[in-house]
Picture 1: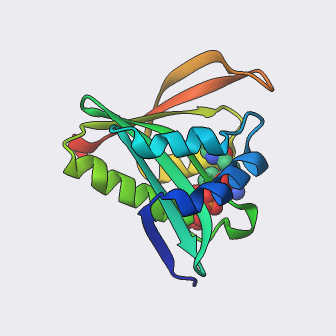
Picture 2: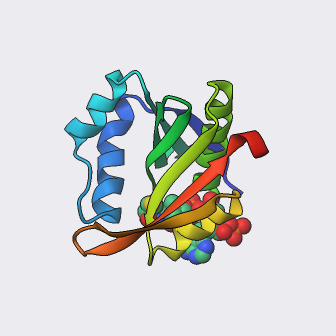
Length: 150
Ligand SMILES: CC(C)(COP(=O)(O)OP(=O)(O)OC[C@H]1O[C@@H](n2cnc3c(N)ncnc32)[C@H](O)[C@@H]1OP(=O)(O)O)[C@@H](O)C(=O)NCCC(=O)NCCS
């Protein structure tokens, strides 16, 4: 089992994270967009390192008492080795420490891996947003984790 290190995203991670975005999403975040998050007060972006290399990241915004997951992604070669789980655990801990009551997110209906990840952490399915995504057009499933229930 490889050791996973979770740390705040910094400038040195941006290039690799933009590469993860390109490999995972049809509308990837650019390096510029990721770098801008470093100065957004509500943004909590964490990087997962494995073997000292950037393996994945997870970006959350704390808005009022709700934490909103912008994105979570792991390089294909590092998947199924608990990087996303470690990121999620760290984000849940941070959200609780910051007084958030809920973590919420949207996910493509067809994204079985991500949905399984969220369900494993106890997120509950609240409903569907029709045609929320483009490229390709697809519904979003809305999930929430109520931190007050934990
Ligand atoms: C979803 C994603 C972030 C999971 O990352 P990961 O590091 O492989 O996840 P973990 O190893 O921590 O797996 C945690 C749990 O997620 C679920 N899971 C992860 N990948 C899965 C897959 N391919 N099929 C089914 N379940 C999966 C399992 O429940 C797993 O628990 P288990 O290992 O005990 O079975 C990764 O597949 C990814 O980057 N996908 C592309 C980007 C993406 O779709 N992001 C989500 C946008 S909403």
